[in-house]
Length: 519
Image (cartoon, rainbow, N blue to C red):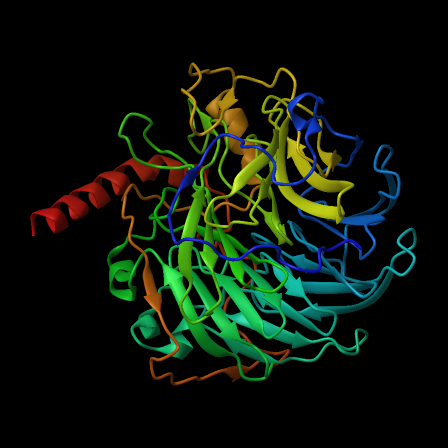
């Protein structure tokens, strides 16, 4: 079986350790201390971004910027491209879907959404991938706003979106994949309780849906848990975040490249008892003792109305963690399955953690090649055999593609010293790449938000379902308006100019924090 059936251990004590070095594996695998750990295989694919796999772990599907690719991974030592579909245009249109950074798969269907940042059209394609070597287009569904990411359960597409001030989760009925039908939307402003003044720059960056619950990563506004058992009427359940609604209103629109906040990606394990939230952040001023990168936080979700933090998995460290010219080691996309967390950290590589005791995660393996590869995601393919990880090329290289790794503990031989473990001393700062080259390359491939902050709050606020809610979901129609998909969207568009303005914003936030401390 590709997925583990049961979470093998309970939640454990509610302590908050910072996870560093790899401890002894809790499985019977004792070879990890002596057996070299390295990729099983790889295949070059231009523009590789998000990757997902089918039920039996024989095929991977990749977003590739201007389309998607299907990859045969039945033999993980020799993955091969089965098909590529690029330059995707709706029937009868000469406009192409741009910045495709996400795909989702379920029941032989593939959702291809976009644009992740901006473009002339927005929406998603549905493909029949029963024969992954010959994908068959079934439909195109137009939407009025940027679709950075989606989730898909085989019957409904759950789309992130930026639509004026609403920033909604949009649910589209695709039970007939040849004829998608509009459904409901939900936004924090529908919930109220201070969120009705929700600012438009608090984007819904990503969404994960499992069973009757949706987990929505709203960047600095945190993670909202929704009951979507009635897909026509999503309901608020719980929330966890670093800011109250009032504090968010005080933040300038440039507040978001540095922590706190930065809720970028969220996932739950098989029985939704554990939730992982990954931040995405950088360091604007290396000498101020503040800034990113961000790690992955684990929560006890036994009561989805009130997530309880258990632990933080700290990111790898590097001498220069800046946005435009540094080495990126912040958390990116990941998967929780059974008692393991498979994670990607851009140039920080890929990791496996044993989370059978989620209050004390145990790093089983860490592989990285920061001079060549920046990993986008990590996904289990076949349990106890291998996982896949997509990577785009570090500036100046040409190594974008899909990699397969053993699903076991292990130790990399002679890893690069450009990045180090969280508990180790920082490497010597390097300036081998220029700001201009790095910023230009990254702008077209990353899912970064374009805001700046250096606040250092460590408390998180929790909103429970006990609060009275006043839902006001709306129905999506194909002719809805609410923001052109080619508008410049904070958090989704080019970012080089905002890096320059970040220093001023950082100073403002530090002054504001000092005033609060004095009060």
